[in-house]
Image (tube, rainbow, N blue to C red; front, side, top):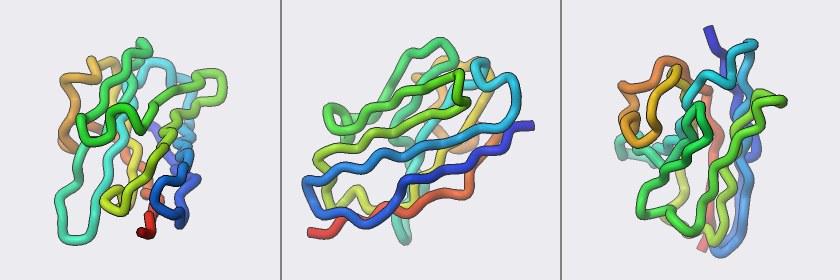
Length: 125
């Protein structure tokens, strides 16, 4: 069982930056592939990017070059660094975990076993 807690959300102006963190419980964090998703009001939850248990990263074209994903296994934490934020990035951001999967193959919510509660990111224009 893995428990995930996101933090770092907030209100930021367009062009600004935020860093989200997702802290995981348990001693097997290093064996989990971690994904970041977001969900805007009235829209489906969508994959933003993630990092595999081996450290490979993958992100969608809409955030490529602006968002960076990293992990610190010693701290059981995965990060989403978001730069050059746009109003369309406004959403609730979730982290999710699944064990030992290639990140490029787990881009749907149903691919993940564990979820955090989400953190709100609001980008004003």
